[in-house]
Image 1 (cartoon, helix red, strand yellow):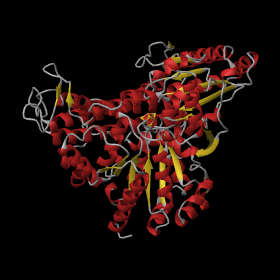
Image 2 (image 1 turned 90 degrees about the vertical axis):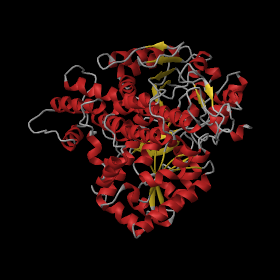
Image 3 (image 1 turned 135 degrees about the vertical axis):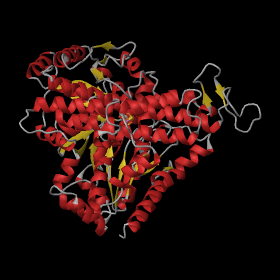
Length: 622
Ligand code: BF8
């Protein structure tokens, strides 16, 4: 593949060329080295879950159609996929657990580094999940709420998640009927590991339905808890302006990049970097100041709440270091390519890990917890200033000026802009000026030209008066394309254009990080409840055009299990089973009222999404 097939962007191309010139291997080089992939693995037909194997299933072969235990292609694929989804759900939910722990620590008075920033939201959420807030201070409410969420994770949740109350009744009844109502966050993940042990659940469809239940425990459990506590502790996002692409790095500043997912780490780093003492220290070291920028989802967290600029998405992470301008990269967990450590060693860049769950060989480890976070963040900022003094400015190349973008569309902000109720949006949908809404979410995958599917799909949808919400790594793509600016309304169809112009908003709204996909399903529930229908009746869809991760699979599946038609740019490793593939691509419609489509071409995907939205509009009599 030529460089133009790898990425849409000039900033990325410039850095790929620089990496090549400097002998640095990137994700695209490694993909080439791994291609062609093993066909058995690619189609989900390998099993190494026991030591009678490993087995490779050849469905058409007399001798190899079954693994040593007797599992056929369907069961092998289903077991692998079940564990894939469980890992994704576990990742979001374990991130959420860290926030529950922080909220509990605030409640117990065990931390002074973290406080309640949005007391109104704390009280609103506590009231929503049935806690009384009368005559209680924030700490007492925080303690009770944390205890309730802790039960949601475990065994004592009365077999129902706190936020199940948000789900439209019809949907809850359907989940009960099909047997996929999520009972506990950790419960469903552990049960999936149990079911997929040899000799337990040996029916492909049964495992797939439990995968749906597991994913729901993420969407309406772990992720939703992570989002809501993050707002309570760090503030609920409000619309604001910021910038995106490699041009957000500054040649004359100490550049610190935060990468990973947890606002617990990145918010504290930001607080230290904004401290006047350190700004003065940076100036004494010869810098003009300290510049913090984000990558991936923790970047989205800071972008939404603090307006911190975004250096890039998943496939930009290596390339940021190649600029030679990054003094320190601070990471927590998830989506952090281990190669970043190696690349940082080719420059003066310090690579610092912070989580006891995520050590990186060759990194410096500065462990953060809720008691020491500010002290550790101070230490890291000092390390960055020190690293700046070692920077070789002759190796620095920062590609271009940044793009502006608007961010901060929490559900509170969206409903606030509409006057506090979903009614204006519902009226716009009824009138057809907004024909529907689509969440474009998820990652980059080096198998696809970076950000090509994201941007073209979004452009096609807004042209058709379909409002787009975005999260995760789709955000940088759509931001770099200029679609997160109010001016992009001119690219929308007449109806959507008029709505955006009257509200002064872009046709693509940034609603947060990947755990914040919980905001999207919550908003769908709010709309469905206001209309008295199920989520599956709404003219909405989801899309993960360039996804790569287990977490994205969990998100896609909880969207579908919540009743949302979902597009994927690439299939998961399930195509070795006709049963599982047919279930995903159609059969699920009969079970949960939605299914997946797989389509790498954004223009064809837009056609299919549009057709689905039109069918749902017709179903509602619109
Ligand atoms: O959780 S979009 S590459 S950073 S998995 Fe990862 Fe995918 Fe980016 Fe965030 Ni989400």
